Length: 398
Image 1 (cartoon, rainbow, N blue to C red):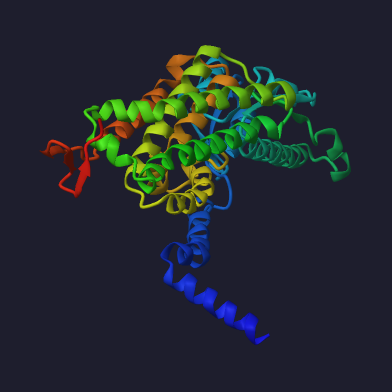
Image 2: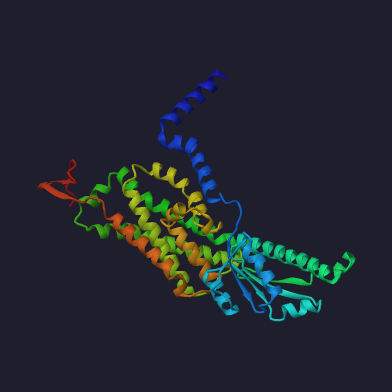
């Protein structure tokens, strides 16, 4: 027992002395708790971007509109007043759902005939879908209760006769983009991208520390090669491997797990190429200033969960604090995940993902610029020796 406690005591002292181990054991849980609290602080999805198309424009239809416009669940976009505008706004992600009140709505109610309103919603994100569906049913139930009570009061009817006017209005639900409520379509692509993100970073970020540990990096610095030649030469194998893995995982997911992949193959390939390049060049920059490969591996283990959480892939971005959204836009995953959904699930074209393509392209440029910051000052000091970056002397390689 004493021996075991001595070993435990030694391990505790080791954790307290090792900054990385201390961060993983004690600080990381606090960080994740704070991050989850910041992202999910709202607890509920309210103020859902919504459209209300009133084709009847009657007192009864305006009562329906009142529920959806005055409550906390929906935020009505007043500029969308036709079905065509609503459909376009849904495709572009401006709204996440809408309700259409038919032209003969009030006439049918007056004749005590059953009628229905059309509710459509975007189910590519299941959190949006489930909440809109729930709120829509609640709204129609509330309207039915109000209408039945008002009708009974005006007609002097006995409460037992309420069944004749109760539930005259029904919801006709139309689910767009993910009508089967598939968790595969909702979540699986994001899992693929975070795996590629982490594996791509891990692969390329180990390359320079491995060279440093083997004392071979100095030969690149001492060579007549330009910086861009070193960057592209070291990165190219990882870009090819990353793009191959991207295509392979999507092919497997589509054919064997039934992941929905529609839209332009060229756009899907373009996104994959840009995503891979952004990851690799940012990873190359990280590898330049890492002390060793173990240090990188430890830190990268902690990255995947925060990147996924703050991206808005599952939880609506408008419910996440602005500072966290700004941080999320510094990661390629955020730009890629949103664009991939637009192309493969909504079948949108290049104009609809141009902003995402621009974001990934800017990240590539930033990654390349940062990757070129390493010093490469080659100073010959003798016929058979060389000094690099003001450091010690090295034999000249022939």
